[in-house]
Length: 103
Image (tube, rainbow, N blue to C red; front, side, top):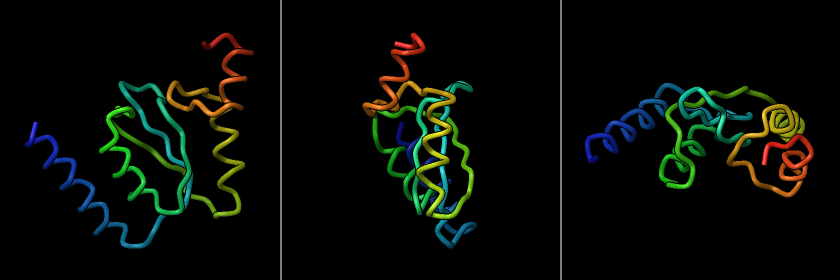
């Protein structure tokens, strides 16, 4: 377990060196190929690192779409509405999940 945590830490510190500037955009957390969570951030790498320490958001890989800060809400909302990820539980998303019979 400590080895896995060390590896995750090494990967995130490596990404910080590769992407020294903050990346603004919408990110997706995946588990076994399924989108589990969609979020937005003006510093994606730091935000994903935070999620890696959150036991309620299990994921094995991530992806992101870089965008301008003023487009964050629109991109995030459109992706959440399209994919209805399990771990997105805000009121608007839950209404959509009920409408489409996802929950």
